[in-house]
Length: 457
Ligand SMILES: Nc1ncnc2c1ncn2[C@@H]1O[C@H](COP(=O)(O)OP(=O)(O)OP(=O)(O)O)[C@@H](O)[C@H]1O
Ligand SMILES: [Mg+2]
Image (cartoon, rainbow, N blue to C red; front, side):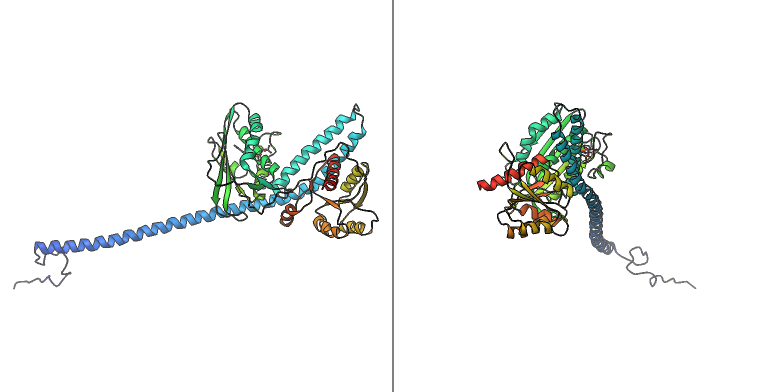
């Protein structure tokens, strides 16, 4: 018996590896080519699929990073806001008290003869009050509760005006460079809407920090780009901005320092060298002007701060500061009404103004002031009122008081702006404003100047 093994029925017929199928060479090649083509096509679609997966993954990673960044920004903003509320509250009460301290020091010093040995002691009190007022001002600026008198400011002009002072401050071994922008903007140069004094303060603070970071000298560059278009932020408009980059070749900062530099009282400088308010102030001022401030730095590689401020628009109007008296005597015989809920401030105003010859009425709140307006027999020439008062604020009081006394002049005074509404309403007021703390002599001068301005009008 012969065994016949039939293998053909096993295994796929098309299997090119099958030795059982009698295939000719050409057929084999054809089959192989077909097979390779199928595989290539499927490889290609696989590659496309892998690429799109990778792309998706990259996109997902980017989105996760963006989200983490936004989260970090949010935490940072919340932290700064909480610190701001705290700082603003403290600074507000301080302003009134400081005004009382410095005013009474001024009264005392006026009462002393020029060779009185107590004079030096009074001067020390005055110097300390002045220094405290400056810390309070910076704290308020940081908390964005400072009363700002914004104006349309040309950033290049501001820098050019500061240049001499900055050079002197930086000293010979730090090179200062102001980079003027290319004339890339058509028409008049764009302006920013900011309190000019505060704006200068920010630029000076940045320069002082740069100097401290370059004890062996180096280079400080202010580079202005008049037109940088940015996207809108949580509390900031998008669109055209002025960008000011402040770059130094100093020691730079590590991550731990970078994460805290805008906090009030954060400083790495030794005892008595830094208060840690420079950048906190800058942060508050720039944010109050609806701008932003960023920093980029590495240890040993210098630091670059970028300030972005939105362009001023035509509807933004300059705020009028209190006029300055141009006469030697500040005396007067007019009748004044002083309104402030802080008895110490009322007393300072009464004392200062009545010794100049004025008749001074006082009121502790808007209700009392309106009673005077209704009942006082003579004319009331000028009303000097605090803005932040319980029950009715000074702006509302003035609006009502003007019904009874349309001819009365007005001076507003305030130490801080407690909420957005007031900050927005203030620059719309036609009345001069005095920022607390101010001295008795400043008060007398402003009152006289405001009354004189009316007579000349
Ligand atoms: N350009 C810079 N280069 C390196 N470090 C800097 C720079 N600017 C700021 N810093 C760091 O940030 C900290 C905070 O700065 P900030 O201006 O707020 O306070 P300060 O300079 O320490 O004190 P103050 O400004 O109140 O005198 C500094 O102590 C320093 O460590
Ligand atoms: Mg500083």
